[in-house]
Length: 595
Image (cartoon, helix red, strand yellow):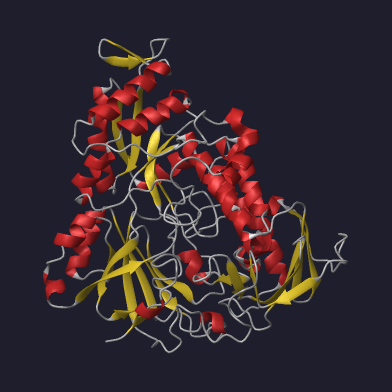
């Protein structure tokens, strides 16, 4: 445990550096909003209060504790009931403003950060949010979940510097750490007395946020009710947000069942992931009568990478040539036409659709300079043109399969009696693990399996329920599985959770593919140390290239807009959309009810 409550003086030699105390903090430069801002740009400060919204999710839940790797908790519990020291401004990629904390102090080199709590900040039971709660949460969360451990390991000392102030001294350079710690959930220490934060439980955490859990039908629905005594309702950061009196989430076993529920009016919103159905499948009565409207919400964030991750912990996927062969065998153009009518663009890298992407063609000079020391650890073409293959659109994909066959032969996988095998006679065979509710992904995998059969590869689709899926992903017990990765315009420490070497063996991280790359970790370090926007951008582009060169995932499509159908009485400010569009902080946060 790092934390201590003893008031103490700084131990670092940072007193000669200028210190700044502000209402917010940005990764580079200054926050865009002044100290006296009225509301966030994407919020309507005059939005009506009241009404309810009923949303749908595919899957289920068996826990209300979102801070452990055990069990599956509803995604809405933490953002709607628990608050953080600072809050995101979703129109600025890399800026946070004071929420539980009224101010943040740091120096030019960011060797420390200090937060001062707001005097009126209170949990739902009326108890004040204290420095003790902040410090206890900092330690307890790091012990409970790997996602919080990396930042915890970079803090040399954490202590109370006053009745309402807490300071964190850092053990290594990381300019994002003040923002990371500002976004760390703050829990009530008293609420967890005698309970284990690492345990799965059907008791919601006590939070200080706008909602509290009002009703639960385990695995089927959860209802959150607006707190009349929410302490932060008049803060500028929260003005025009969290307008509904009630938020209910209904859970469904399958997306098709959820769509039918939306058509019948059982839920009030539906994000359409199938472009073909958006164009031709919305002629049901509630649309034609005007009860339901269709909204297309553009965004400027990086493409959400949806694809099939290959578990490189498995020996058959340890060779990059095998992984490239599987990419060549995946007939994207035919699959996209079959599933989407051919409308959806392909995500061509992890930060595609933004200026953080590696781009097309060979690496530029700045990226080459960063990756050059790691050339021996990367595939030989890492600095060349890494464009994804483009098929002719026919189901045969003969050119792609020929390339795949050559690569497999080079990697030692030959064909004997129609079956692909290695020098030891072991067959190329694997399972593709998908959730039961993923009907679209099952269709994609079924098409791909037919192509793999022509290469002499035996692949089997395995569909499991949410509990099994969660457990198997936690323990990396799979061969190939779908992955969805929503990178932001402000990538940072979370990239270590996605790609860090520790995740090769440590259960519960998001390093699903088992990436173990010195180049990847070095580019993340460069990104975190960058002080100028152009240096940051170059580091992210180099990271993007190292990941694409590793061929860890077979990329699929992305949408440059959200297709959202919703009850006509649900409103949002279409003239002030955040750069992230329909992502975190949008629905239900800035929406309101108006009959």
